[in-house]
Image (cartoon, rainbow, N blue to C red):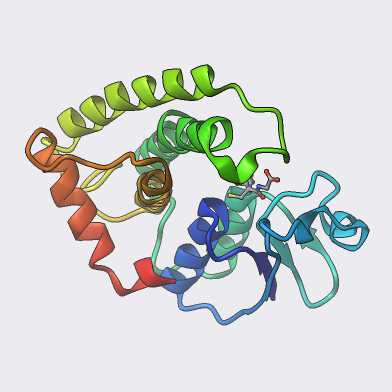
Length: 203
Ligand SMILES: N[C@@H](CCC(=O)N[C@@H](CS)C(=O)NCC(=O)O)C(=O)O
């Protein structure tokens, strides 16, 4: 398997951590977003909408959504289970992974895209919208703080793909000065410490 990724981008990191948790071997090709390598005609043959990550199988088949890739890997490598073992847990993991995607990762990337000089001249930016997304994120941090007072991991009593998504979202906030304040969000900070201490978080 070949993973096209950018080491600095949060969605490819989700897949790298997932693959590391599974202990699955794979090769990588770095596609630098800063160098616009994802915009080339050649890369668009892999993904017409020029986004990372992309997984290419040995026979040339392509998967280009992080969660589609992770689900495929889970099917082929059921252990350790990261998507839930029964109907209830699978629903919980799905729910919390979507919450982490839509309520943490999406606004975090929207702050970055709309306020960071990196994107100046590359895309149209709306700084005020970015600032609004930052305010929304603050309310989401409050919500996750409340949730994590009740359990050690995002979707329940154990580490799942929902933790991977939330970790990648929160770490990517750094570039926009979005940080967990341990004084006001001790449970979120403790969770962050817990998941960051896993060796796979370095993947
Ligand atoms: N839903 C997609 C999102 C992919 C995505 O937005 N990737 C970002 C990197 S984290 C990207 O390639 N951005 C390049 C750009 O916006 O030009 C997935 O999870 O696979």
